[in-house]
Length: 297
Ligand code: PDD
Image (cartoon, rainbow, N blue to C red):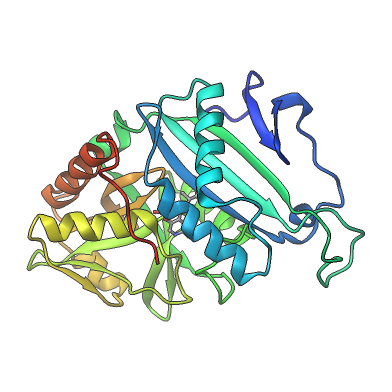
């Protein structure tokens, strides 16, 4: 992904598909002023949306938690996402969705009820199937978790993650694992997993402390199908250092093997078999029409 936006793009803005250059948002948008909005990111592989229904169910939940009315049904969202991907000729990459509380004179409480939410969608091309990082494995660093207490909501208030991931970039690694009270919460934009000496997958249970990851759900299901044991419990940085394997997962990274934590090798310092198998199984299902349909309740 290059750092300046590719101009030859169609984006979705407030009910219309418009050229990138024409998609403008007011300076009074509450997403801009207060980070008063929600987002979602779903992958596209072979030109098809991956696990979109679950991502849209989570979008609906996030919106409800902050009292923004969902502007579309899940079926309509799905059509709009697919239409946008097709208009952009997207065969592999991401669809980004953002819904904010809309445009109103700057004032903290909610604006009048009839204020229309701002709805934005754009696509980003990204190699997902052939990922160099997944072949070599990546490093992570640990950083303090500086976020608010409702991390289960996919809020666009991402400053803590921006700082965490910039620290990772400065350290020359791919992701930052955020730590609270000695325990790993999650990655800056991913769910954290370790594989214990016994081969058990360990990830943090869902609570307000972490985002309920859609890829996490799929990984749990795949692991069970592969007869792998999954334990949902807190784990410490020390446990992660001693783990046989570690990986993170998200819609954009799928399953990403971790080969070092804070500069120290994980296991043998190369991608492990568990992460590899999970990644392959996930991608196999993602390429099969309707095979990945996580049940996000
Ligand atoms: N991030 N935890 C956090 C804090 C995240 O931001 C994400 C996703 C995840 C993984 O969720 P999922 O498996 O549903 O993608 C966990 C997206 C990809 C992003 O911000 O770009």
